[in-house]
Image 1: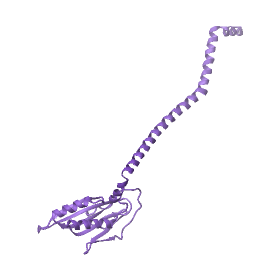
Image 2 (image 1 turned 180 degrees about the vertical axis):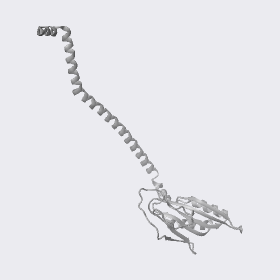
Image 3 (image 1 turned 90 degrees about the horizontal axis):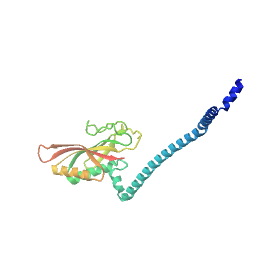
Image 4 (image 1 turned 120 degrees about the vertical axis):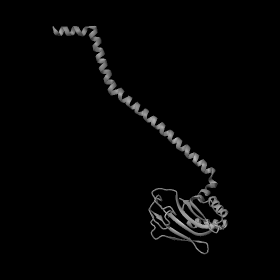
Amino acid sequence: MNKERILAMLKDKKVQNYSYHIFFFLAFSFFVIFAIQPNLSTAFRLQKELQDLRLENKKSEEVILQIVNYQSLMEEYRESLYVLDDAVPSTPELSFAIEDISKIASASGLIVQSMTVESISLKGDTSSAPLGGQDGSSSEVQNGVLGLNTEINDQGTADVSPSSEGVVSPSSKPELLSFTVSVEGKASMEQIAEFLKQIINQRRLKTYDTIGIVSNTEGTSTIINILIRTYYL
């Protein structure tokens, strides 16, 4: 009885339609899970990789364009690059710097009474180097900073002697280094102004840290104490 009833139900049109839809849904779900879903995942992954590659390509084009611009600037200013080397040399060139200052002082009429190299870093970080003239010491050594004493002798030339406590530490990265030269002398205000002007107009890059001017009691000359900072790589 039950068997005949089941067979009759299977022959019913509605039951056949429902059965067809159920089996179709199961087959479609199986197809989606095991066939379409991996393909969709692959398509999305490839699309993301394509976007990343386009972004990287854009960045690479910007870098290449920047390099081309730098190359164009190098070609344009090739004949003037030596000026940069003269302004900021790769070594301190201490003797040349002292000689330049002495020549300018002589040409401007400044009588140099003393000239002292306050601090110079041969290699390493100069962040803790003592600023010349702040404590009156010209031989203090800290963190790779080698103190050098320079005095003007009777012939008007500079004598340079390294401090025995100098320690050189390795540099972790390239940076713009500097050393300071303290100059004390006397001259008229016009001669002092000419001396300062010629120092700035030199090709070697120099700046002033401090300038002290004291009028002489006799009124014939003025005493100047200037701290000149000279740069190198």
